[in-house]
Image 1 (cartoon, rainbow, N blue to C red):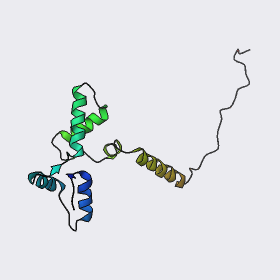
Image 2 (cartoon, rainbow, N blue to C red):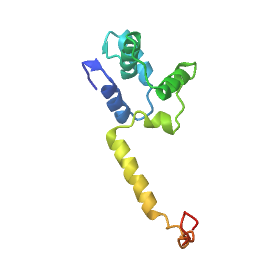
Image 3 (tube, rainbow, N blue to C red):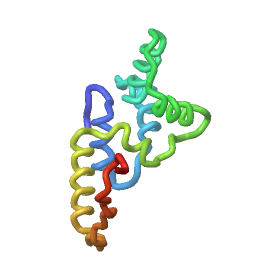
Length: 129
C-alpha cells in the first residue's frame, strides 16, 4: 500500500487489508521515524481546537464538561454510557434511533384502560340559596 500522507483513512484501509490486527499508534510512530508525512490524528486536531476555543472564553455545556473532565482525569477512556455515546451522534444516527424507538413503541401491547370516571356534579348553586 502506498500513500502520500499517513491519515486515518489510510490506517483504516490498512486495517481492512491486514490479515492480523494492527496497532495504528505503532504504525504512526514507525512512519514518522522513517520520515513519512504523518497527519495529526483527528482527536488531537479537535483537542487543539477545543483548547483554543476555551482560551478565548468559550465553554462546553455542563454535561460535556463533566464527560471531558472524567475522560481527561487519568482514565484511558470516557465511559461509554448512553450520554457519552449520544453527544457525538450524527443526525442520521439520531434519526435511526428515533425510528427504532417508534417501532418499539408500536410493538408494545396497549395497556388495558379502565373506564373513565367523572366526579358527580352537584345541582346546588354556589350561592346556597
